[in-house]
Image 1: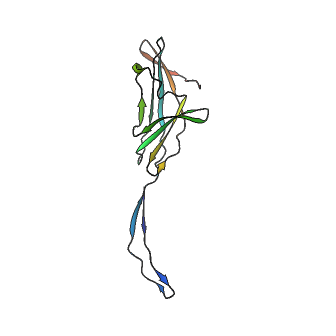
Image 2 (image 1 turned 135 degrees about the vertical axis):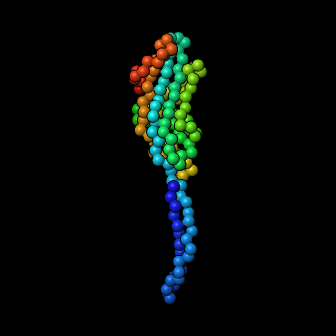
Image 3 (image 1 turned 90 degrees about the vertical axis):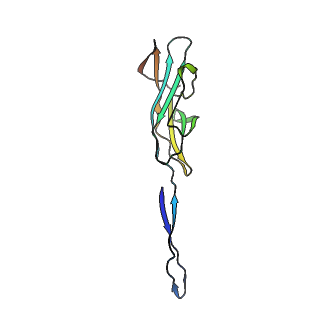
Length: 142
């Protein structure tokens, strides 16, 4: 946000008059960029395969909504969320692949516009074996 004050004065061939009183204006700027902090895909190791995905990002001052988009091979390819929250997730019991993608980018928005897209964060795959997530398995680009 920024604050500006404007004053005017009239001039003619004889000279200029005094400045008017100032009038203030508040300016709303687009928010700073957010960053994705985690992107996880959990998947069971036995049939029926169940999948759940979650993505979290940092909150940004002056933002009133965020846009989350799937990202692969240098391209934005699917809008996945547009709203006020700083995380999205599906439950493993829903058998849903919502919010699953090779990578994600996010940007913060307000009435003045949107920030640049964040750097992409690759989605980490966790295989659930016997109910215990196995961490650190890479999610391959599709």
